[in-house]
Amino acid sequence: MDGTILSVQNITKEYGALKALDNVSFTAAEGEWLAIMGPSGSGKTTMMNIIGCMDKPSAGRVFLDGADISRESGKNLTAIRRDKIGLIFQQFHLIGYLSALENVMVAQYYHSMVDEKEAMGALERVGLAARAKHLPAQLSGGEQQRVCVARALINYPRLILADEPTGNLDEANERMVMDIFRELHREGSTIVVVTHAPEVAREAGRTVVLEHGRLAKIINQEDNHG
Image (cartoon, rainbow, N blue to C red; front, side, top):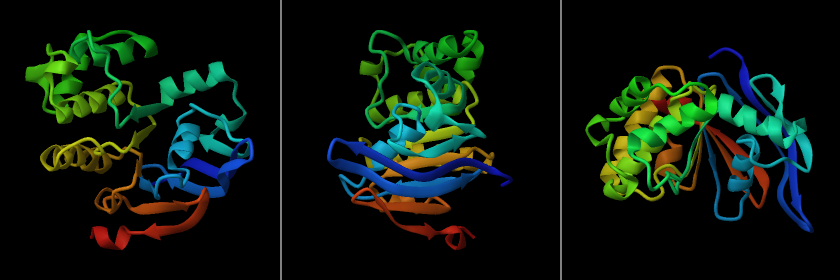
């Protein structure tokens, strides 16, 4: 791993009198797998929204791939999210009237040029080439999440940001999705996973633990990964 790709510096996020995040700092190195963990209300989702360019902090700074995203306008944040980040959500957010293949191609459309062959390759990578023409309603939850992974990867993001990626999956599909994450990490992808599941967090090299909006601790698990 060379270089820091994500630097969160003294981030505070306030909603009126509520402090969702309170002076939180951590970094992620290029090629690192980082987990962000904590109970409900700990600030995990708020942190994901800030890192994912979907919200801005009240104070502090966030650097992604060298750019200070905490100072960018809404329009620029949209461009950074499109160009630099592959987002994977617990709720899938697939377009119901488009096939699996078309859902992946939508991400290409917003980024650059549509390439059906490349989109099919992304589905093949997650084991869904045979389901490419199926609508989301015709896919299982695990299959829908794998379409989301393919969609997130199609534009070669600098950072893969996943919010509870196994939260809606049964054990077999959770294992399948985690296998894909492991493969991506071996290939050098930078992954940040927001989760409440200890078994998911254990896969990461380090875990940032949030409690009541504050940084409680950072657990280094690299010794457990051989």
